[in-house]
Image (cartoon, rainbow, N blue to C red; front, side):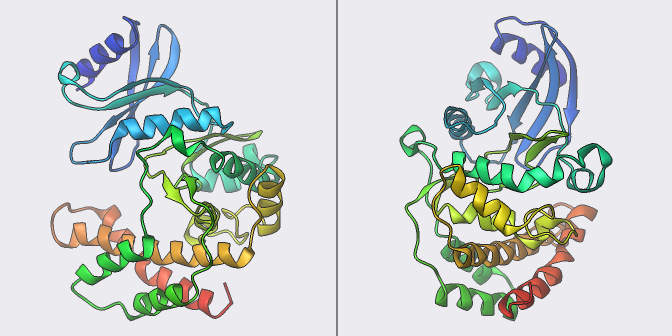
Length: 313
């Protein structure tokens, strides 16, 4: 793969000299590599086999995000993976220096000056995301998260009473939906590059879709994405800082109760995702300590949901 990839990168970048090709850690749907092209650091993401999402849609969202003023890596090349590239879709972007690991961002001295700024910077970035021209990305879908994850729950072979209870609460308390816009879909620590000066880039756009903009704000505040820290906004800041920055940057007026509803939905959704990932291990489809450990977080999410419904989050 590396030698084939090196030749492909050179071809996509007009014959550039490719060096220092290094595999980075990545998610289930992408392989990520860092390399140098004519002496300049670049990043390439290659779509894994079995991922049915159209990577060119993600590339279009990234380009539209840049046009909207979102801090993102510059898109240099998007290749759909024709016969000449072995059918593997890929995307080349500039390399942005910084940190993505939450515990380092939250605790290391290097980011001490950045931490008080981040909630506000996240709010401004989300406002820019939600201004993206939907006509620039016509292929994005608008899923119904309750319907989708209800179907997932119905396929499980054991009952989860707490998740059923929360599903009913979500249905009974659904807030009025705002005009749909482009949302990132996974806006949280881990999908942002942070430097000592704060937010440098928003990355990993494969889950972008159309939805109420409050979905992104609620997901950012889900307790799991606080990574053990107390402040509600990514374990770093307060709701008021996030909301004020979002509105000041041109975002829509915020109803805190609506954000809270999306926060509960995000926790419910993450609990179901944990069940699904654990099932991959338990069924033997892919034996993995990581997937098994994720399965242990189901009860943690159920506990968080009890606290949320009691108003003690």
